[in-house]
Image (cartoon, rainbow, N blue to C red; front, side, top):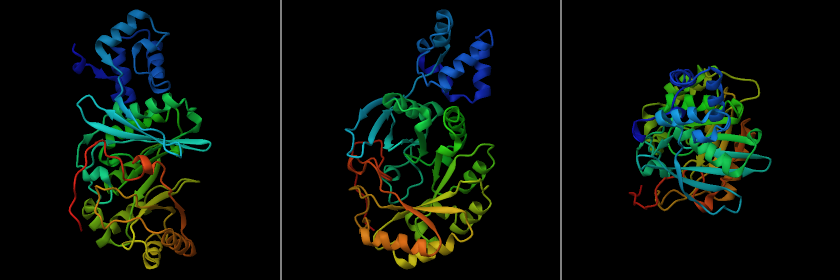
Length: 352
């Protein structure tokens, strides 16, 4: 069996994994040992499974693989400690993930697709175009690679699917990855961010264990939202709000509304009032994200001045909306919100 023909066991949901192993592994307790080595310890070679007989490890390696994507570049750590990782996939595609130390917690930002078909005009990933869905091994591999390298205790880890791609357009593989993560990390410390893919939000609502949900709104009205997020023409704003109203509400958890602030476009006092009105009746908090400028993005898109950011936030607060401001980590290494690309070439984009 060639290397390309071997099944990556990290790509299999739990039941399928146990069935695949059951064909060659006995006694049954060995299967539990293998699953623990993978899902708890995150090993990427069978030789690392030191409590298995050597013959069994050889048989597993002949039939399966547990390989992760290869790290081909690490940025020098930013002033805030953030570090960006460039991974190369087996087919030559490249993706990025980000390590973000945050005091007594550490967050890892994972990609779910190589490229992105959503095409938000303020995001570099979408600018470079669609790619493909990542497999579970390619997603969990980002996590374990970074966690191992920094030796971060699992109880201090948070995971956010806010890297390259739209997680809810890769729903089946996302769920398999979430189930692996939950072996070490509680669902309340995992966040899935979406551009507002309504069928995916409804599917997420039906899961027995749900991660935190973050939804990009970015404008308080349908016209402007569709202008900067073309895919939302398929998922209109009113329909999205309706889906959030029926999303299960859990004690101590709120939906996060992500709102990228673009100077002179969606950051006025009236915009904040309209956003508060739009969100009335929802159990949400707003995460205001000052735009991260990039030479590949339209030149009219600018980061608001600090005074404009403060006025927008104050207006939301006065209108009863909980709000935080995301001071994006890793801006100087192009690792902040909207800056991941998985490529090292520049392109030009038409102006508005």
